[in-house]
Image (cartoon, rainbow, N blue to C red):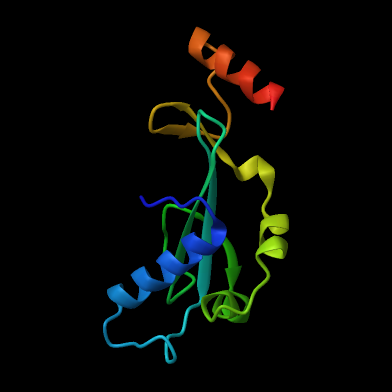
Length: 124
């Protein structure tokens, strides 16, 4: 799993990975059908992004499907506004790191660590 500090970096890396996974395509001829995104908040409060492109909309990845068809293709082609894309992200889908390398939508409240993490998240 590769995470990046900016959404733009994550999109660029996902584009490169898609092209590497599909060696018969070059960037101009590539056709994508699905864009998946995941936002992470690390324990130190740093925000990280992960992005995936897929050739079909049936493929599963680590991230949540966000756009498909022409909308996904326009992101792949670099025709997007990062601010608009960030605004479309639903905060309830953000994964928070509650233990090193372990992410959840919400911290487990049945442990002291989980309650402490929940209190810290509420403060943000």
